[in-house]
Structure formats: C-alpha cells, structure tokens
Image 1 (cartoon, rainbow, N blue to C red):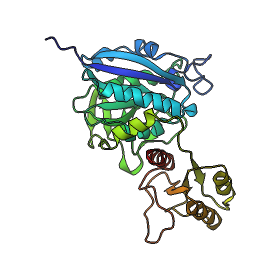
Image 2 (image 1 turned 60 degrees about the horizontal axis):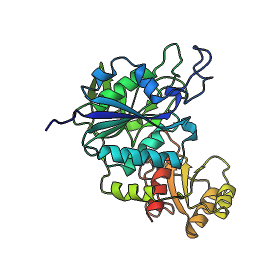
Image 3 (image 1 turned 90 degrees about the vertical axis):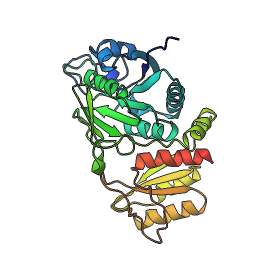
Image 4 (image 1 turned 60 degrees about the vertical axis):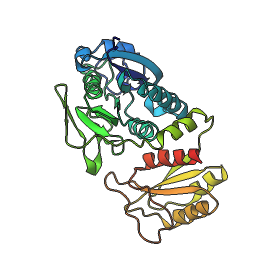
Length: 320
C-alpha cells in the first residue's frame, strides 16, 4: 500500500504578517489581516524546500488583528489544531498570528493540545506584507523549517530567527523586528539557513489534561470571566469591588516586585477571595517570578506572567 507523504498545515489568523499599507515605507500605519494565508504562502520562495518534502496546505481559521483575539477564535483554533494533530499524515502545524497576543495564544494552545509527538509553531511579523523589507516571509520560512524538523514537538513561536517556548515567550518591544524574548529562560534555539540549532530541549506537553480541556472547550458556550488588575503607587480596591459586583470569577494581580500589593488593593482582593472569587498574584516585572512566602494570603502564579496566569486560571475555572 502506498503511503501518502506527510503534510504541514498552515493555519492563518491574520495579524501584521497579513497586513497592508497604502505606503510601502509605512510600517506602523497599516491595516492588519488583509492578505489570505494562501497568498502569503505563495509569496515565499523556498517553502517547499523548507518543508523537507512534506506537502504544504493552508487554511484560513480567522482574519483579525490579534489585538482583537477572543475566546471564539481560540476555540476554533484549538479544535482545528487538535484534529490536525490526530491526523497521522500531519507532521506539524504552523499558525500565522499577530504579535500583540501571540504569547497568550501560544500558552493557551500549550495547555489544551497534546503536542508530545508533533509541533505547533506560531509565527508572525512586525512589518506588514506591503513593507519595503517585510519580515514575515523569512519568519514563515523559518516556522515551516521548525515544523519539518525531526523530533520537534510542543508549542513554540518562531520570529527573527529565534525559537521560543510557549511558557516563557513574551513580546518585549513594540517596534523592532526582534520583538520577542523569553526573559531569564532565553530562547530554545535559533533557525539558521533552514536548520534548527537548539540550546534547550523542546518544551514538554501537558498531555494528561489536554483531552479534558479540549472537550470542555468544544462544549462551552460561555467562558469564565477572569480580569487582570495592576498594582501601582496609590492603588485602591475600587476596581476590584466593582468587578466583584459585576460577577467576575477570577482576578490576576500584576503585582509590584515579589508579589507586593498596596494595602488598600490587598484588602479588596482578600475580601473578593473570601466571597469565592479566585485570586492569583503575578508580577509586573519582565523577568523572574514571584517567590512565595509562608502565610501568604493570596496564592502566586507559579512563575507565569499576568496574561498567562489569566489563561491558566480561566481554564481551571472552566474545568470546574
């Protein structure tokens, strides 16, 4: 029996990589999500070679500016990825995404997909497709090369030649093309002339929870409401009180330093926790994590950034 050669499927969601501007030199005044994913693939020479012989297929899951990413798009994306990962002919999945919320989508997919055997690779661009020197084509080429790499697994992002794991990746710059970092952890590796050079292992998948999470996502019409609160000088508890009255189910605090919170805000958070709202502390520091102390009134995020702690808490509430 003849076996079909493997496939790499590229899922488009929009973003700057698919954006266009009336002026080719304008890298900030563009409109995101204007070019379809098939057109993006057609504009990149060498993709078939980067795929290592695998067939390249394209599907448009969404066409949005990633600042507008929401739960229905996450739901559709996760379910499509889950189906593709179960297909024995699929070697890996590549997702074109906007940069603004890429780290959130990456962490969400990491929590809900079984990627022990196959990678899900998110890529993006800081310049629109119409730019004089767009960065999207090289990023897409590198992402396909990562998806085609033997042994690749987990949810990763690829941009500016760097490979980052879903847990640590974050957007660290609003303009330059190398806009992503992984803080203390550093990148997993680099893509150099189509070859992946790793300095860390591929990220482990949370496979034991993935089937349950996907089932919950597939059957959920409403998602738990979790909001992020910022601690700062002179912070009050007014916002917390208002959110509790409005029915919020979870709160993540972007704390100062090692999880510190203004006394007025802390009092409101403890009060919210006492009436059943889940509260988690993270830090607004771009590196490091909150180190818990005995007797802490509010639990910490176990090293997650505020936006990723929000996703984890949201999925925990959904599982309940």
